Amino acid sequence: MNGLILHEYPASGNCYKVRLTAAHLGLALERRSYDILKGETRTPEFLAEVNSNGRIPVLQDGDRFLPESNAACFYLADGSSLIPQDRYDRADLLHWMFWEQYNHEPNVATLRFWLRFVGLDALSEAQRLQFRPKHEAGRAALDLMDRHLEARDWLAANRFSIADICLFAYTHVADEADFDLAEFPGIVRWMERIASMPGHVSLDD
Ligand SMILES: N[C@@H](CCC(=O)N[C@@H](CS)C(=O)NCC(=O)O)C(=O)O
Picture 1: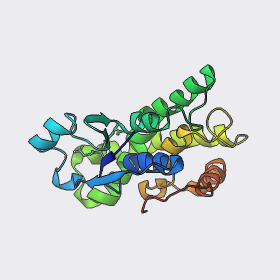
Picture 2 (picture 1 turned 45 degrees about the vertical axis):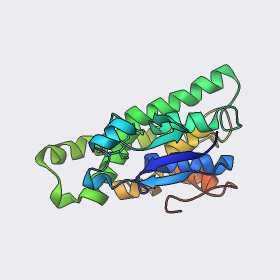
Picture 3 (picture 1 turned 30 degrees about the vertical axis):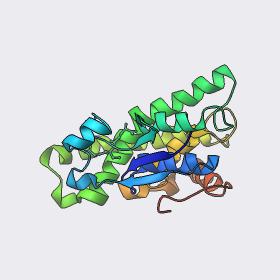
Picture 4 (picture 1 turned 30 degrees about the horizontal axis):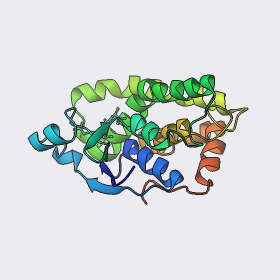
């Protein structure tokens, strides 16, 4: 892999996943920033050249473009110690990454976006109606993680992997989505382990 480019919005947890994976692998990424609040990923150029789905992150390797944060992490980490070799462990890692996209990110990340970037007062009626169900679903996701991590150091394969990276990205900023992480001691210990790993970078780096 040469000349990797990350098309991103720096404050996005989905983009942070890709930067954190690259940091652990010692891979350099050129970063190209788009303001999603100004619709910069919805322009005809972006849709035609970068991602027809109008979203970041997109990882570019040469003339190939890879949308979807978890796919980008998998692409970078394939063949490294961040993805286990064992067949069950690999599938279990994918289980957590799919679960993140269905049960965690649509709730925790969306609430964070609404509260931190849109603002409570600016939410539409439809968003207001979804707030409570999303908060309940986000809480259920954090609770499931917390119970899983009660007696384990890592989410999958008994070792640090991209499953941990992909779940860390929005979990560690869940307070910005109106969750109290102190209620989840297993998650807090797991986040401390991740933040103290060699090679760790923060969301703001
Ligand atoms: N499932 C996608 C979600 C990507 C996504 O929703 N990106 C947001 C920012 S985190 C975005 O580009 N929003 C701008 C828009 O939809 O116009 C992933 O994991 O990469």
